[in-house]
Image 1 (cartoon, rainbow, N blue to C red):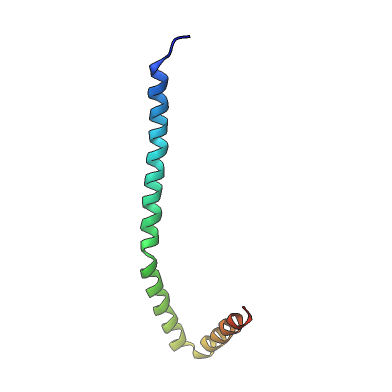
Image 2: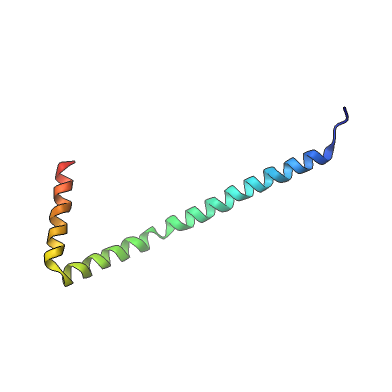
Length: 72
């Protein structure tokens, strides 16, 4: 049986495509996690606005969160 180098080239191409996909996926996931600080700041700002506009609901939510925290 003769060894065919075309198959090796095809397999190398497939492996390279898989590797490149993994690298691109890692870049996309890491860039999404870098935006966490922006999301945390927006959540904090939204929380402050919510508590200023609806203090009763804010207190109810706060009490519920504290209750959950104490049950852990």
